[in-house]
Image (tube, rainbow, N blue to C red; front, side):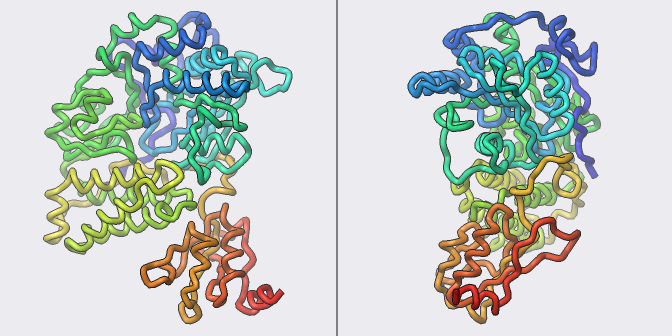
Length: 533
């Protein structure tokens, strides 16, 4: 079984280091060492900074790959139009079990990230800088870095800066989740989609980007666009930080110039010579087969062209001796658990998709495969964040990449290979948060049940509590029981009280340790009296 990756695994570099400069000297570059390695940094005007980002083709390194210069200009224009000061947010929330490159940068080179963020803050006239993290190690390192620069959250400071710690969850890394938590809410996406460039933290235009993106900007600002373009490809210059794990002898974070063959990166980490498949981009990414690996180079465009994805920079090969569908099932089950529990297609659809893949492996035949495909299609573009879309893409890629194994399971008795667990997952399904408050996210220890002997299909439950209840073609709820998301406890109680047939009840889930928060458990008698009032 593949154990969870440490916060800071082995770090390697191909060619001359840029982001990892000085890593061979010290474990962490404090401010004096940072300045010795990288030198001072002169401020740039807003348009100068935007032109720099445009000339080096800088795109977000968190997965979405949005052009940074467009985001920078959009924030500036919105701030000027509204007459308000913008906010700068560094997203260091790296919550995939297979991703560590941002965590490495925050732990070992925090000042490089701050350089890029402070360049943007000064160019935009921002007076607030927030760094979002989810790990204890990244919180410590970044708080120490702010202190080394004399930055803090004092109202008297010219620039207020602080670290926002959130729970380690897949949805926490969404931009909207981070902004919501900074504003004092739970670290889950809100129900509406609004561009952070127009309305982010406190309603102000917000420049939010990934930690590596700001570090890349700091490198380019020091050495200039011409020298920056000497490394890597002409249309995607510079280096890329990758996390390589899975079936490898040496899991590592590696800095490579764009254009390096993917095969070479896998060899450095000790991957199988002929992997059965390679998952590119992480658990919201895509699989490519062994033949395609030989064609691929490390670049966003190249990986897209061969059916892969650079995504969050995670590369995970698997060997010939493991069942690829079984490995993917473990990830699909984890993705289902990582739902915020607030959007029905995600909260209900992702567990249904995981069960569908399990049915396929169990010999469910063509009908099970078609059902899986249908569920994957249904969850896309129906959530408050990208989690259902990325999870569906992973499932569809799995089906497409391993056709021979799929046929063996669908039409025969399976592929006969074991599931070795080579794709890293957090122990127990989720990483420890080390004290971060996630009381408003995830599922509570309460379940809501439908009593079919009383239900008359009024449909009011679906109106009040759409996160859980959806009506089928016959007009009745499609689920008999469901876990109640913590943020929706009040809705669950309201649905119980307002059900005309008194067909709903809430029960405590007594498995495991006792809950810290409980909903009132309403008996039918109490429900009738409440309704009567």
